[in-house]
Structure formats: structure tokens, C-alpha cells
Length: 196
Image (cartoon, rainbow, N blue to C red; front, top):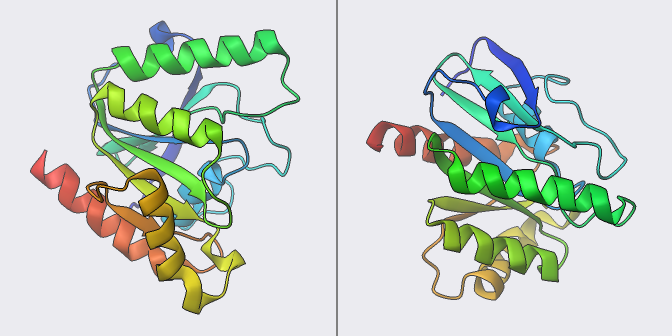
């Protein structure tokens, strides 16, 4: 898929702000600083459409990025950022929950985890949360450039066994630095949207 005219549409903090045009939404979830914004920029060959930050917890709203009026990438706030106050964490948690469980436009969830580390307790909670939502999802083992290229496939398999021992959730490596993995993800998204 080639996206020619992607644009940032809105940062929403309540459901009345969500887009109302009925386009399918592909939702990015993952812990703070796992690379959700960089994923969007890499997929569309832009450096700055999605705002990235080296400071975890930067995304506090739900950001909607319109992909040629075909679908949205939706960037949810990251979880597990300890410097957020308890009240802020609760607020963010509440509107993530409201979005995931009430939004009818969600087509697919992309769950990003860091390829270098075993899934955290928060990752496992989010995995179970996504399962309970009943929505289709894939797992992306991100930051694959941070390990030797010869170890990527084996590490992805190990991560999949830890999180999804049944092996029924498609799991891909990804890297914003090494763009070699991008086509596999686009092919999956393309097929998925065409079938649904």
C-alpha cells in the first residue's frame, strides 16, 4: 500500500471528538516510548507526521491520523509511565478503556512490544485486555535494529511463545531504522482491510 496524502486529523480526549466518517481504525497500543509514533512515520515515509519524543508519556490524547481517507492510524497513550501522577494514569486509562470497548470503527489493534525485553507485567495486562475486547490484533516486536539481525527471527518466536503460546496471533519484527520489515506489515494491513 502506498499512502500519498496522510494527515494528522485530531487529538481527542473524549468520544464526542472522535471522527464520525466511519473509516476503519487501526489502533496502536504499547507501553510509553515503545515507538508507536515512529511506527506511523516509518510506514508512511515521513519524519514528523506523528510527533515523537524521547520523553516517555508524551502522548496524553488519542491521536487520529487519516491515511488517504482509507483508514486511520490511531495512536493511543502509552501505559506504564511511572512519572505520570496516579490521577493522570487513571484518566488516561479510563479513556483508553472507553475507546477500546465502545468504538465501533476499530478494525485492528497493533500491539507493540520492545524486542529486547521479555513482556512486562503491564504488557501482559494489555495483552489480556486486548483478548477480552474480542478485537483482531497483531503483535509487533519493535526496535529490531537494537539486536543482531541474525537473532531477530528467533527472538520474535521467543516473544510470541511468552505472550501468545498458542501462536494464533500474527507476530512481526519491526524497526524504524531498518525499513526491511515494513513491507510485511503493509501487506498484512492491506490483506486485512480488503477482507474486512
